Length: 97
Image 1 (cartoon, rainbow, N blue to C red):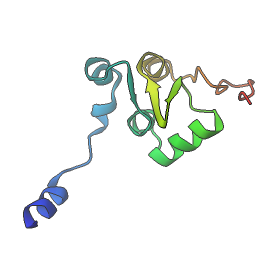
Image 2 (image 1 turned 90 degrees about the vertical axis):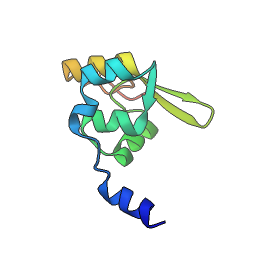
Image 3 (image 1 turned 60 degrees about the vertical axis):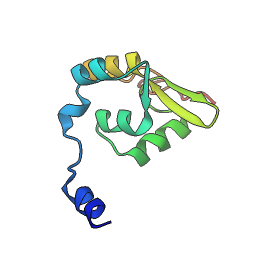
């Protein structure tokens, strides 16, 4: 048990480069978690899920049963361009009801 506690304390958070476009392109499949996509976009997991609930996440989100996944290709476009592209997140567009 001591080993686990020590391991947790020594395990650092993933570096920002872990969420770069190149790294995501190389390591993610067709979808990623909302938590990881949120970190890649620069906000918290809680904020990411709040945006998903409001239909304002800046790229395409799939809801499969109880699971919510972020589509990788639109996420990469958002990271590369800096502009949101889906779910009503564009400026001047209303979120779908």
